[in-house]
Amino acid sequence: MSDDPTQVREFFGVRAADWDSRFPDDGPAYAAAVAELGLRAGDAVLDAGCGTGRALPPLRAAVGPTGSVLGADLTPEMLDEAVRAGRGEAAALLLADVARLPLRSGALDAVFGAGLISHLADPVGDLRELARVVRPGGRLALFHPIGRAALAARHGRRITPDDLRAEPNLRTVLADSGWDLTSYVDEDTRYLALAVRRTE
Image (tube, rainbow, N blue to C red; front, side):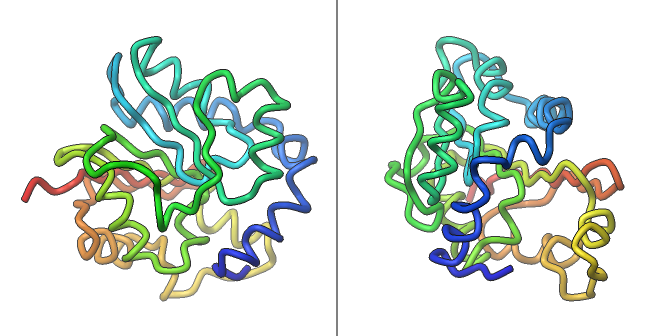
């Protein structure tokens, strides 16, 4: 699949209406990944590329009523589905590209990105933009409810050495964009990379 923003929008736009029904059992995996982000009451967190908003309720539960939850996606139809599913009540929804976020620098404590990394047009630049809006020491979670091998099999492909989500490749891209990879899990049942925003 292309990482061109227009093609990403078209790809997800036509799939938005039945997206949740295609993956009905992912809820617990999202909640478990959010729990590992280490959010605290009152934190400000962004779900980058939030899609239909499956992470928004657990993110809201983690930061509580005094926290802030934003969901940003560049596909209007996905945001419409998030509202239809009642998830818009858990967050403020933004129609925005993660490459150009309408947020001040250091505004957030953390970013959650489900299925995000493989759709970034400029991985280093886009992850640098996520680093910009997170305070030094803040956290990033890059998540998928199934691992790389299972996802490749689902799409009838093989994992290649240049896969951005492979640990050595991801570690380098994160380092080049202001993040330090602190934890990496790639199992059949989940993919979760955690990183911390550098303080310098």
